[in-house]
Length: 300
Picture: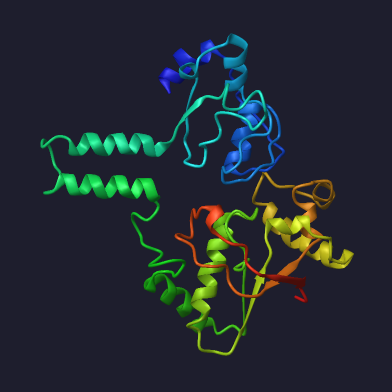
């Protein structure tokens, strides 16, 4: 913090407060900061910003070489944050991006390169395993949620099924278990739905499963009556009272382009669950075929 305040701030512009009215996912929000424009691209970083970044402007105006601009990213999905997708900008003027795992790789190699200090018996084997895991995705370290594919671990599955057995619902409601990653909804929404769908297979009491479409439903026609939309809004306002970033009154929400479209839509999904993927946290979207899901108006 001392370096930031004493060294960096005097050399640039410092904004003590900023407001962003667009999509608040990591990539779009950060993309707005580095471009000065609203961004509405893939929330998981598979698309570059649609307008030039400050890094491109810096290099192009001063005719600087590639090694003159660097971005140290705080998120592994920021690989395309260094440049936009515009012709005559983009790669010719983009900044180099250093992802967190580049630092982790270097740290691992440094740690196993010396025999001094605490360590493991076979440092070479550890280095190979860690480097391989970082190349393939390092979310699997720690609590193991998944066994293979999208099958959740036995403990997690048993816990969720245990809740169902305890409360014996006749209907298990969850989010969209049919949609694949990268469809516009958040990965944690799909994860919750995948877990619930898998767990209900072990729930012996006769029941129905209902999944509900998430953020992508704003691309579908409005299908809620005025009374239904008002009821949803009342429920939402009970929540938003505890979230200062959300609209706080019915009048404000009706004018809010982020929240009001959700009140006007409720879509239930049906069909088979999304195809198995490598991990339920960050599966490459180009490896996940779209689920054959049908949509119909929720009767709930």
